[in-house]
Every structure is written in C-alpha cells, then in structure tokens.
Length: 189
Image (cartoon, rainbow, N blue to C red):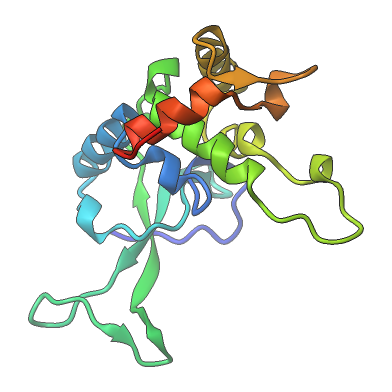
C-alpha cells in the first residue's frame, strides 16, 4: 500500500544525504535497518536520500523514503531521463511503530571525529567566514536530538579528541583526535 501525503504538516528526519556518511556502520544504522524491515522495506533498496516520518493532513503518519526501482527481472536500472542516475521513486509506507530512539552511543567516535574533520575542511568562499557555515554539530542535530549530539561531543572532549575555544558546537580535532581518526580509518597517525 502506498499513500501520498499532499502536504506534510510535520517531518521528522531520520537520515539525510549529509548525515548518511556518519550513520553507516553505526549502531543507529543497524537499528534503523531492522526498523525499516519491520515495515516491509528492504534496506538494500533504500537510496541515500532523506528518510523521514511525515504526517499527512488527516493525521496519518508515514515513512517517506526513496527506493531504487527494479525491472521485471528484479534488477535495478538506469533512469531513462537521467542516464547517470539509477531509477528511483519516493515511497510512503504507513508508520506502525516508532523508530528506535537515538542514543549517544549511536554516534560512534569514528562518526563524530569524521564529521568534525569533514566540516572543518570545507572550503570557504571569499567574503564568507567559517562561522557562517553549518558545522558537524548542526548537521548531526538534523537527525539526532541536541542532547544526544552534545553528549557525544562531551564524551570525545573528555577523551582529549576535541578542542573548542568557547563552544563545543564549533570544535576541531586535537592532534590526539586526528591520530584517533586516522587509527579508526585504518590509516597511520
């Protein structure tokens, strides 16, 4: 059964293209995969696009996600209108159970350090200042509650992996944090 909300009154993001790299391989990803399976969704068919819970005008809650399309033989195929893209479509499935509640442990050390590393390395266009760019903290807060993100930041700060000046929200990696990130990535410090 596929329903289509005409306008969503509310949207709870569970994953976005910006947060997928920091969800893959984490306990949160494992829990979300089990949860979508419970709703009849094959995680292998879910594109790395937003996954959210939307509420349609009549109050029905739906899981909204993008699914790779398959041909009659069961194979994914190329979108004829966009030959560099796989064919996919936005799907809506009735929400039967709430998604797993996120926890601090769901944001692994690797995920947090990688997010901070990636966001600190973004180029700044002339005329902009680094503070105007949304950082790792804000990106993670799109799919995790603020208190969960704060707890993960405090955990890594307590381990000596972060330095922040005046706010953990704008943290950067210490030498120890950069070495730990390299170690977790399988590289050399």
